[in-house]
Each structure stands twice: as C-alpha cells, then as structure tokens.
Image (tube, rainbow, N blue to C red; front, side):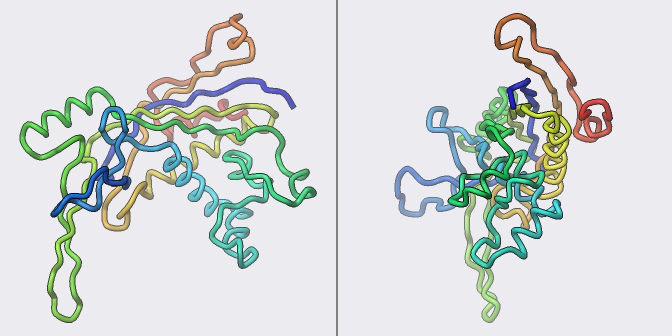
Length: 257
C-alpha cells in the first residue's frame, strides 16, 4: 500500500433553514440565553465543526449500509448504537475506525490512515456581510438570530418560553474535505462520500432537526486531484469538476472508475 493522490472536495454549505449547533456560554448572565450557538474563538462568529459534518455523514451512511447497519443495530448489546468498527464495510473504509484490543480484528481491517478528512466550515465573506446587514436591523447578533419556542404543559396548557440562538436561513459556509487514495478500491469507495452528503441533505445537522432546524444543501462543488508528483513540485494540481452539484457528480460514471 502506498499513497497515490488526494482528492480535495470543496464548495459551500447553504442553510435552507435556521441552524443550531450548540456551544457553551462564556459567562453566566441573569436572564441570558442558555441555548447559544457554537462560535469561533477568534472571530466570535458561528461555524460548522468538521466533527459535526463527519459524524452525521458517517451515521447516515452506516444506517444506509447493510453491513454497518446490522452491526450497530443487531450487534452485541454493549456495541449497539455505537459507530461500526468492523473495518470492512464502506463507512469504515471511508471514515476509519479506532484501534481495538482484538489483534485478529485489527489485522482484517483496511490498512493505512483514515481516508476522509473533514475541515471546519467557516462563513463566506458574503454571509458575514449578510449578517452585518441583519444586525443593523436588530435581527441578528454575532451571526445568530434569536428564536423563541414554547414547551407546553399537557394538563394545564401553560406555555414556558425557551429562547434559542440559530444561524439564519440562507447563510453559507465554505467546506473542504480531503479524500486520500492508497488502494485501487479507494477511487470507487469515494463515491460513498457523495452518497453520505446527499443523505445529509435530506436529513439535518445540529440540534432540533425534527423541529425544522438544520436543513442544508451542498452547492458549488469542486474536486481537485493532487498526486504524489504535485507534492514533489513536479506537476500542477488537476481540476476534475468545478461548480457542480451532488447529483451531477454521482451521474459522472467516469469519476469513480
């Protein structure tokens, strides 16, 4: 096994609805908001952590994979609900598995590093301007709007208000993923990354997804190939796809071998 090339997958994540990925409060305030969004420590603006993207993509692909879904739903009682770690199914081959104490099991797993790297996704400059305009109108503060929800007592019908911060609809974040190719089957397996992205579009990311939050869409997708010779400074990177959609990429039969 030897490193052959990296495929850099980039584009934008567009919020089709409000998005809430929870963070922690820096200070405790009387009458303050408990449900704040996650913010970058430098810019103080919301971002989408790579761990949230990768984790949700993996869980959706696992439930869609016959081997992985059987392992996490019907496996040993102590392992049910946990990420699949068989090392043989498509999700394991793409997203990787942790080392186990079972030497035989480790020997049967796919060799080499985790194939997929998912970066944190930060807001585009256009979105930052969009937030600034909304801030001037008093609707958004530090990239988040305030939405009030009510919990209802089923007996008395008394409503208890619950304020939540969320990133407003139509916000966009720049994403980047790097898929490493080490074996011949990796090219074919890369298709699973785009299946996971498509599954995520029909699901949600972050909290309160079943109540309308967290619907996203991947747009303006580009794929660049960087071979071993690129990293040696001998050749330039190769543009494979530009400004495309997931459906167009999956329909490209030549891309995945």
